[in-house]
Length: 391
Image 1 (cartoon, rainbow, N blue to C red):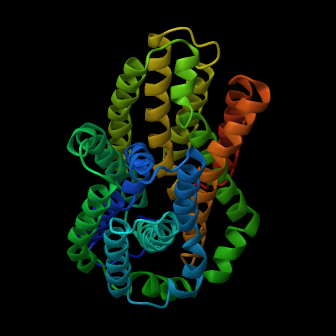
Image 2 (cartoon, rainbow, N blue to C red):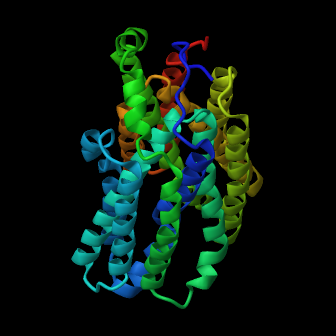
């Protein structure tokens, strides 16, 4: 497979092992985000926390997950990736175990931040390896699909399994699953990113000329606006449905079923891998996502809401692998993909906060929906702008 420069993309050791690593760790690392509703209710019940405290805790976790990018600029290309993964995994395991033992809100926040920093550091490695895989599109598709499959399992099983247990059981379950990931660390080439950097060193000057800094900035901005638009709408889908007089049971069923087409689209993107049709796939996905948001204006019934939720979920999980692949084509040393993790976390954190402000200030959802549409369209423009013909 060739890059836009026409050079052969280096392999990161055993490709199959790399894909195993990406799939296993992606599924487990994002559990804390996928089970946020379960954890939230348990924290309120066990610790008597207010909504503000719970929101603050989850925001700090997400922020730490993203901020793991910053120190990674210093170590990512200098360490043994197997050893680094094992160390970060052990930290995550211990953090989850201790989280289930503490009885203080402050100590819980500290434990969750440290745990998320470790998990975020492994995510940086995942993104770096995905960008250097023989087929980045397939790697990023697997990155998304693994999360969604785990999310579907959690939505189906966790509420009943942990209904009579406290939050400690959830944290200890995450610790156990993280521990099971450790053998997967040995599946990757420990010097994959370091070796990749050396391989591309000769071409760095040409790479800079082909892909100037402003294209990298456009790529990062595309990811940021994509996640702002995504998270601002998805976070308030329940409230939008309630405003249209849909009952909670119907809304929950629709949102759960919407996970299935999301899995299907990410699996489709994984199967297709990188493609000369990437630009068309991106445009089609973005237009579908914008249309799904537009369907939420003047929401009147369950059928309209179901169509919007299904298309929204299908579109964004199809877009993401191709968007990440587009950015990896601009990356000469792994640091751009490292920065992408920061944009993902920042956009994911800003979206709900911005959405809440817009809802409260306008007294409705139209301002939120218009802003989300604008974010998606801006992301599409930037994503299309960084595409380059493969040779």
